[in-house]
Length: 357
Image (cartoon, rainbow, N blue to C red; front, side, top):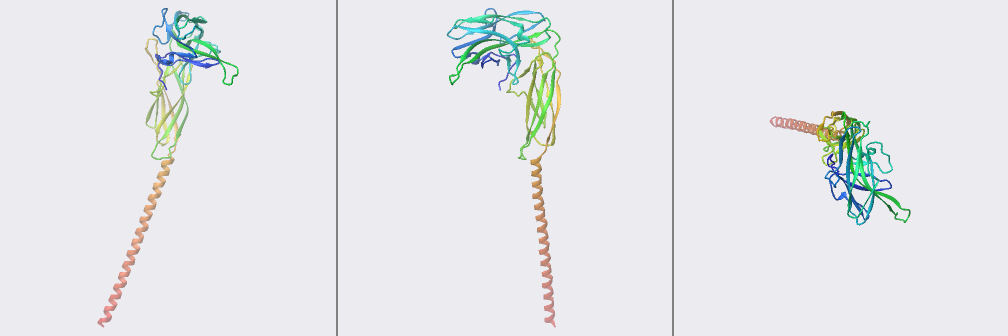
């Protein structure tokens, strides 16, 4: 999985059938250019002159405050294109990707704070700087509020069987994050939803423990959910180093499943899920978030090891029994030899006495 950064979100378009959705991955790349047959374009934060190097728009504002912004839409096509412009509430998907509501869904949050023209027509190979206004309501709650701004085109694609065409909306967008000034209260919730143990039938190979849990952002700032599962003498970090950072907006929840791959069965395996969430101010200052720890346990019967032990005991019992039987046979043979010796000695003695007489 691609690692996502709070400061490293780039711009990408996603081709969608009927009602579009938008995804915001990290870092500029070739994927910043959206293709819809012969139409390609990019969208970037800008000042009045053009793109200004930012990868998203973010502001810290007071309730009732308004700020002017810009986005730059560049038409990379060889034809004039009219782009539809829109703003919508933002959210993180269950996989941790940032997205914005599709065209047919109604925004009720930060997406309604953004005003911009409904469309812009751009000549082939040209760029347009579009004004954007962000106005925070007077009664907006303190904390983080996310939205997205997108430029899109509509097209009709015929089905393979020649049936009716299907409307396709292709969008490219950028993330807009507004922090409303006031009391910031970052907080998280943690609940373990399941724990299971998978036995290895090779007694010399450990099994694996799997723990499922859900993290909820109970505060009013964006959280990075991270921590450690400690179980069976192991420490497994979540998310893993090669996985995307898991950001949660206020009120969002995210499910995790962490596997401890080298857990030996010890009848009862216990441990803890330790959540160490982080949050930060717009200037990068780290905000204190109380950590959480929840105990976790599961039954882990050592069946394969028990079978091995029984097998070893049976072998030892067989060896011990054979040894006892061999010793008894030896004692019997020895006693028989002694008895034969005594009989032979008696016969010899009797023979000698008869000769003397």
